Length: 327
Figure 1 (cartoon, one colour):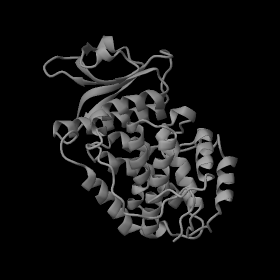
Figure 2 (cartoon, one colour; figure 1 turned 30 degrees about the vertical axis):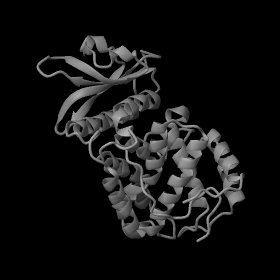
Figure 3 (tube, helix red, strand yellow; figure 1 turned 30 degrees about the horizontal axis):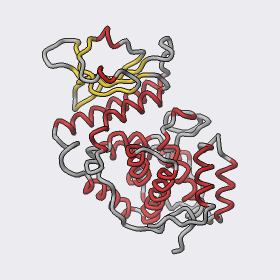
Figure 4 (cartoon, one colour; figure 1 turned 180 degrees about the vertical axis):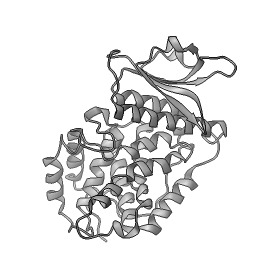
């Protein structure tokens, strides 16, 4: 199989270790950063309950707050949150994810509250993994590889597509100067963005004709299913959010939450553009591949609506350098 410009040839390359890269140590901070961004607030913080001290919490992570607040004990009135959702660990609640600032009078819509609750669940996963010493100790590479292998055995086309999108997105992220934590989210978010399709009927992915309404509904569930699978891997709790949101659109017409513009994490916007480019330039059961220039023109036509315009421009410039990304 030849290599399309901007795509890597399929390769069972190694995957980054969230522990080895140091990413696992900043997972709670990344979740706080994402909570602030996706819900459109100036501040977000994660607190855990202090044993034996009713209505008292310790701040374990935050975004847009004073650094000396981390580790400080606070009471419920001191939190001053516009909205909060429980941090869920097992069958119980052990803290909260809170957002505030910018417009303290704004009320969250039901869909926004659902997303905040999902971040609380992810924070709970991270704290549970931390309590079992799975964030800083050990290595999650084997669990990541197991998911990738399952995808390869279930659907070879989706597996190869995921490898290519990961290579493209990672190279583009480096060119854009992303920080290390963002690069990890881009690479692993791209690699695992379609693992939720493991729950779909195997013949559905290769169906050449039009999908029924029920089939389309099932397909639209794969980002949420994938996020659930990824969140179980120690160190990938924030990556799970990237997977969950990879079908959001700048115009707010994406799914599952209808986020818009910069409320969609940058890593997700990169994955989305590279995913579409990869899909268009490869033969699919339901479509012939487009040539490179036609695919880039299609991305440009939907820039600002379906795809992030700056990411489309960056990918277009990169592809037109005439370079193939090495596998």
